[in-house]
Image (spheres, rainbow, N blue to C red):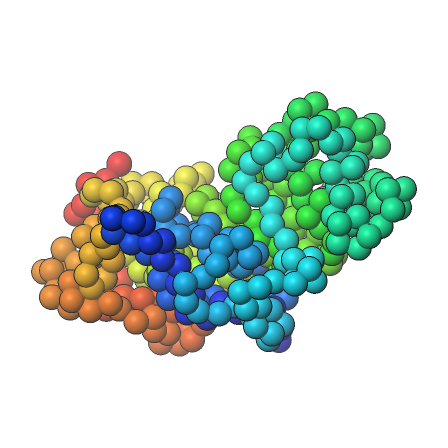
Length: 333
């Protein structure tokens, strides 16, 4: 049995702008992250992934909904202890580090701020943490600009993990790195999780990376979760048309013919300031077209339902079992 660490209940975020339509960045999202496990949050740019992550760490106040850590509501005002227990690894390691600080001081700073540690103790603990993430003592007195991209991200991870958080939000932590370095950083995160039992909310658009590290996956489209469940179930048996399209875009070296059935969606994702009525995906949905454009898709927002025999695998689609509908009639590449 896994222990529920983070629970997000009916989270919504609306950005209101004077004289302009409101932007519904996140709409009624519910998620669970278990202790010692990773939830991969995936979707294309503008789907609301990062906004969810910012709400979790307290950088963004939700318009509606609640967040719970170990069953305790976090509310709208976080304590210092809350910030210690929930940390974040940002996408760009360069902008995450103070260019005037040496590496060892940057990593030790959270101990001085959160726990009142002296400079000497903070530097000792920082040196130990830097070794833990694979950086040698020769690098600890350098500045961020003197390190490679992969080394900088290791410094950011060390600074995050030095407080031994219960939950870490990883917002596109490897997208700015070379492919070979990406694998090293993902493996490092997995090792740290195994050692400490930290839970990860791993936000990414690269489904191959998410598959490597995530135990569970939630797919977002236009602010809503359209499919969620154990990673193997979602990857091996996707049911939502949007998930099918995302999975078909993953590059593979396996000669199984998946690349020949690449689904290319028509048009761009609708604007969150003017979302379509009913299912938010129906304007680009190949299943909607194949089924003769059912009125239900245009008029009703689909509820998230559990699939038969797969209770943890949920899909927000009016016709989730119509997996036999062949998308190859759409344009392929």
